[in-house]
Image 1 (tube, chains in turn yellow, purple, cyan):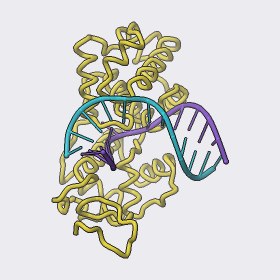
Image 2 (spheres, chains in turn yellow, purple, orange):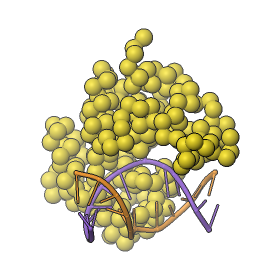
Image 3 (tube, helix red, strand yellow):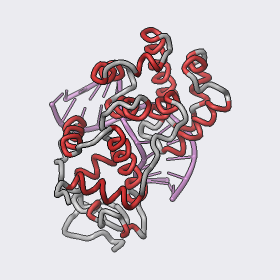
Amino acid sequence: MNNNPIVEFYRILFEFYGPQDWWPGDTAFEIIVGAILTQNTNWTNVEKALENLKVQRRLTPERMFQCSLEELAELIRPSGYFNVKAKRLRNFLTYLNQNYQLSLEKLAAQPTKKLREELLSINGIGPETADSILLYAFGHQVFVIDAYTKRLLYRHGLVDASADYHRMQNQMISALVGDTQLYNEYHALIVRLGKDYCRPKPDCDECPLNRCYYSVDQRCPRCYRQTVDTSVSCSCV
DNA sequence: GACCAGGCACATC
DNA sequence: GATGTGCATGGT
């Protein structure tokens, strides 16, 4: 038995959900495109955009690079922020073309630190998107911090509200002795937990982490509304 | 009709 | 450095 809650959460989540087989996507390029399209967006909307790209046979670096910005934006419209995201995809492809002749294999072969810095230098790719690409598209060992991970750590009192991305990332890494597969699975399990229990759900009292997922930030454990006055309970319970 | 979803860049103070 | 804002669709 390990007393570190970060290790314990993993054990509980894996036992509860089992392997998640992440990232959803058949190729490294599909994973990269998905990572950009899912920025602040529900995954079901991303799936619609990916399907459009597949149907039009634009889901390879070469074919997408030939696509006009207008056509690309139209294809990814269901994922929201389509004008912004079309430019971000184009920015990535321009970088890939100029530096690696559109070869993802050449890009993936760079050392992790260098590759991360290069991805972050591309306008539209921030820490979470870069780390998702590193881990899930290229198999580099980095831990992805997303909104669910922030909530998990915060609500369990493991970080304070001011903690930034890299502090949380270091916290996860230092607690975990493991390989790329562990990092892959853990982040996927956190997202699964978040999707199941972060939003209003009348039957949310079966959270595998024993409802303590909700305990720190004064949100109602049943309806998820924030109770502004903490001396008064939410009206739904 | 309001709120939310697997961010990020940029402006402003 | 911290905070606010624009970007936009589709599900609940």
